[in-house]
Image (tube, rainbow, N blue to C red; front, side):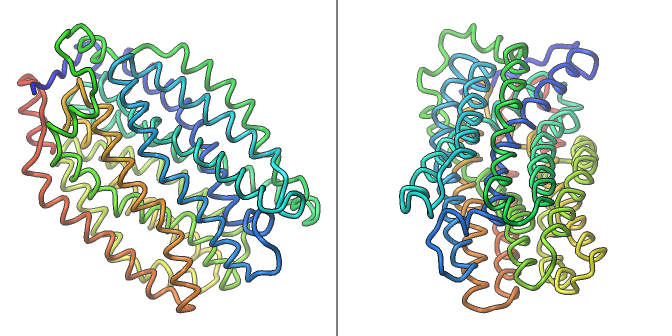
Length: 444
């Protein structure tokens, strides 16, 4: 299958690419704010409100994180559905649908009755809405990336594409900040109605996101592909048939990036509270490190344009393995400055190197006519086995062993899987035009 990568000359960094960057970043941030609200609430409040009372707090949290995993299990389905729409109808159409579903599901979470009010129906309804969130998130990432990467020149693709990941950081910061503010309420008010406010506020962000997405221009590269009458009718099947190795490589690359990220940002809050760290300090550490990472991921994206995607990605995966034990050691000190330092290292260096170079890396592995589907399938299938179950497994390890040691070992294993995938990545892709081939060969 031939690749079609037609980068318009004006997209190489002028006003043309900037409007895609700004619009995609804004819409992406709003959608991920909604998605991450559950992750934060699962660590702070859902375990007590939506699961049987009278159990060990960690057991309730385990139930909440099971819902977290359910959301990730739905992401491949979203990737299939919205990948098909994105490759057949358009990137823009898929993204309008994803933010609509995400916004409605998140708002409804804010009005759900608790376990004490309706019993088992409460977690059931929560899980159903989480599935909708997961499906929307599964279709979001690929489209958000492609609206930038398909309009950027090959020489600057790493830098500009990294902005698409920045929406994830901003969304997480907004979600953490929202919970940090409502946690300042008296405990009884917070547990009764205060926790609902961030979810209800999402309806405002949803409206803004729809407006931004609707006005967003279609990807120019997709417009070129759309004219090809021979393009696949079922892009996901074509992607699996023509790019199976690329899909497997993307899955492997995601293990350290996605799994490690949720151990650092979600499970660490549970662990920190367990060892006696104030939740406010933990949430502040995550939020500040995410802001720091926004800058470092752009740096690493730009670096990947200069020295290559694989080298930068390997740096992040290796750093995650090396710092796994020190990360928890810093948390164990319970010293605010050292706790925040742990997050800056984990997010701002280890994760940033991988996530910053990832969009351009994945873009260059797939042909344009099936790129949305191919990227989404690999990206979202991996999310189930990486980030989706990471907090669940880590919490179970903490319950069984009462120590961070097995969790750190788990983090090292994730990094090892990614390093193996990197070793194979040089033997697959990129399937792109000859005009960009000499650039991509150096970068991937």
